[in-house]
Image (cartoon, rainbow, N blue to C red):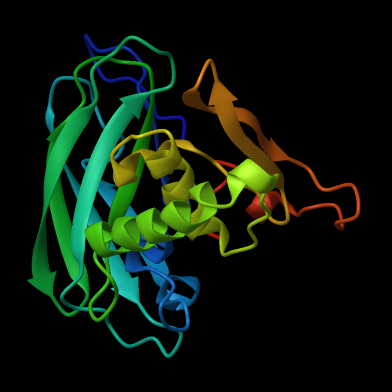
Length: 218
């Protein structure tokens, strides 16, 4: 969102993007709870000002409007251009589905806030990573005879791709993946690599804005 400057401060733009992180970190061992989570947020003060303390207020409700408690959330602020260190904020549960995070934008400019976390009753990120590792171990055993095709939930595939690259599982949040997109993992000089990623499937319907990477919850 575009916010107005205050005296002696430049304009600061901030947006909160959830990119389904709540659902993919919750795992896919049961019906995906993240698909039914409703997230609302505000910033205090609003508009935010660079260099001053800001509190992000987040509320989580399920499809029945019941508050979601016990979620372990993380909030990370990133500038839209590369080279700037992210701002990490601890998220504190206040009860009744309410969560607060204190942060401070280091400079004026365009910011993206990425909210990730683990929903109660789901898999931890480490458990999702272990499941992805087991799949990859089986796949590697078949690659000598040809290529392998994997079909799965998009959020799990993001973690699987991170593990193929020998990265930490939370690196999957950096790999935006649209609905029915095609990806190819391979090697470059025997080093795991991404050959193609998030290629639109020509047979799939034209995705809505909600399915576009970085556009918000799906």
